Amino acid sequence: MEDAARTLHVARLFSAAVASGDTADLEAATSREVAIEGPRGTAYGVEVLRGWVAGSGIRLRPDRAFAGQHAVVVEADAEWVSEQGAVTGRSRTAIVLGIRDGLLARIARFDEDLPAALQAAGLTEADEARATWD
Image 1: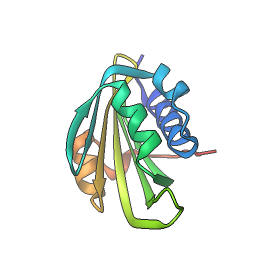
Image 2: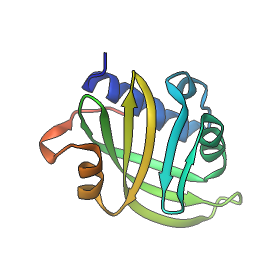
Image 3: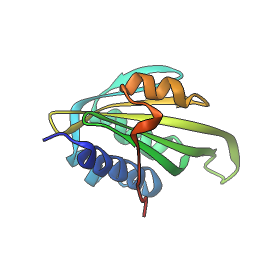
């Protein structure tokens, strides 16, 4: 059953995978056709997700979550780091994680635009949830 607790669980798996670079647990909770949306367009598939987590250089420090039955929005400070360890960019970002049939089906990044992310997820500020990220 899809509910706020399940969406928050998937959000924690996503956060852990991005932090560690290990997608095994996240992949087990992800649709094979997951859509990954960002400023450069949309790509599909768990292989793309694996490559993005391994090669994006993104570090997320989530601090807020907004959860509903079919989506969660994670708001975080993001940094992009080069292979040499230099920070190449920073942004406040909101990431929509869409859940369908109990699996992560959509990841969409909204830099500096929490209202747009909430709207895309069908959520509002009233849907803020308590979430821990460790």
